[in-house]
Image 1 (spheres, helix red, strand yellow):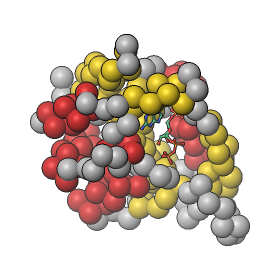
Image 2: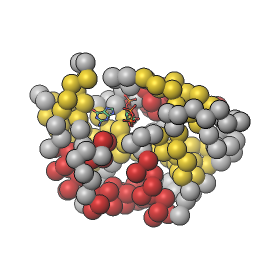
Image 3: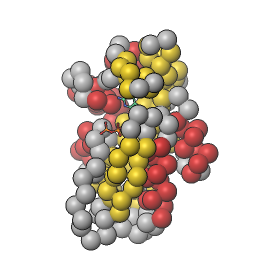
Length: 189
Ligand SMILES: O=P(O)(O)OC[C@H]1O[C@H](OP(=O)(O)OP(=O)(O)O)[C@H](O)[C@@H]1O
Ligand SMILES: Nc1nc2[nH]cnc2c(=O)[nH]1
């Protein structure tokens, strides 16, 4: 299990975004093309390890969407997307997201007090995105049963735990060392 995923991640090119070493991979970029076998492998790992007793799967635009879609098709649980687009719908909540290389506003819609959710994204790195979202989702009165970042880069998961108390489930932990992706562990090790 996860052999294809590990191979693909280890082959990721690194591009510089300022000082930030950004790996490029099908899971986190859709580039190069994603082998469906790999998507199934990841989805199955999330299925096995996350709490699926939820009303909605919540995806973060953009690169949480395919992961949420795959999980939704397996579980029949509906998913909603936290968008970078503002709609101005009633009840819409704006969240400011900052990563290691940029920032933007995110917009939360169709999530309601008391609902149980699984939050899913592709990567946790500085933790900026998840910390901002988890704080907002808690304030909205949602019950966050699982938070998944398929890839944990560097100290992302520990930072989120320290700032929010939330345990992030990650399938693969990696770092970028000397210009290469190094896999540190997987959830199955
Ligand atoms: O832990 P952090 O440092 O916050 O990094 C993680 C975030 O960075 C990426 O999003 P990005 O804003 O690049 O958007 P994209 O998914 O649209 O590429 C990724 O999809 C996460 O949401
Ligand atoms: N693809 C990709 N997404 C990220 N999100 C946060 N860091 C990264 C990164 O290094 N690569």
